[in-house]
Image (cartoon, rainbow, N blue to C red; front, side, top):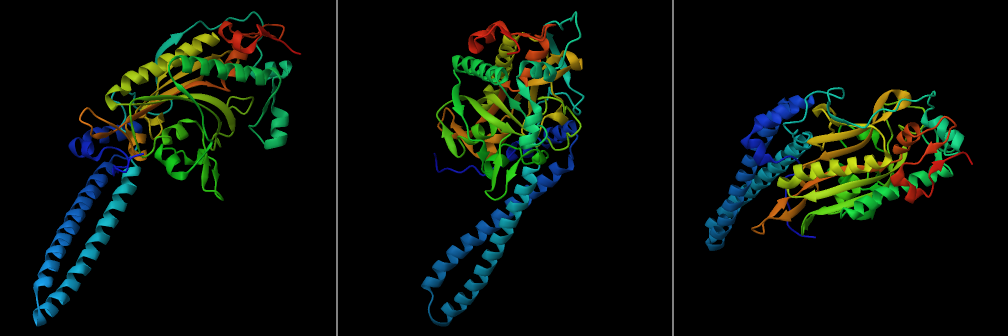
Length: 425
């Protein structure tokens, strides 16, 4: 850990001053208020003016103190009285500086990451499909949905999940539990072979870590909070992995694969995907997380997407890759690609993986840096990408089901599961 402090908490203020229109364009693309840019610039000017005034007064006070030290008698008394006035002015100027810095910080944190210029504009439905991979299966029988299959196999128990924990909770039982562990272990094997360091992460984090990753903005209602402990339950291991190197200077690029349980309140989504395990409050996930130099972030983003596709190929399901629209990126991402698997009974594609380039946004808030070629600390870039989650079971069961209710195990998964076919026990 290093003692140096980088004061800029979110987007780069220097870049904002030099090109405010880029940030305005980003806000428009997201469907957000672009007037916040001018408010932020004004607050920045007030802060810099307040700092200059306070510095000048402190300098004057220091020089005045030397003058008092040389004075005697009545002259000294007069100078002491004037010194009290100057001290009061310094105190006022410092209060103004503090207020200006607080105002700037509040506005600064309200601005999401600057959207990549190639990201589509618009909201949730304005994504661009980049490609389709694989053929949708034509069934010669009426396919069952994943929950009916899971019930027949003794793999999923929603009823007792609700009895024990409430709606959107479940038990994975018998072969269901084995299937999830096999899937996640296959993800771990791929990640470690690619050079990622495996991490089993905490699922409770402090407020400054959750805020630093950008999750306490518009989607704060999705997060479980333990008020008595002032801790948050994570919705992804991206959060603890982003905080792992907070206030540190890295000795080079880092790649981690985080295995964790994840928790999401799914506030505002009631009535959506209430059947089965597509949208639940708790699930398991293996997440890739990278720290790189900012100039290497786009290439790393492409690599993360390629690793996600490599993993999807192993479960042999048709999928598509989408370029997520700006208004659906979330606070911290500059660009995001999702891989969505075909779910036969829904006749729709559903997200299985997501990879985001967060550029310097999270690292700036969490003060994560690296040294450039001149040895000077610079803000790092962070990226994340899903490698497997509980939801993948949905795609596996539905796409590989057979008329008798059994499910063929994808070839690559068999060594991890020890079975070629899932059948009712």
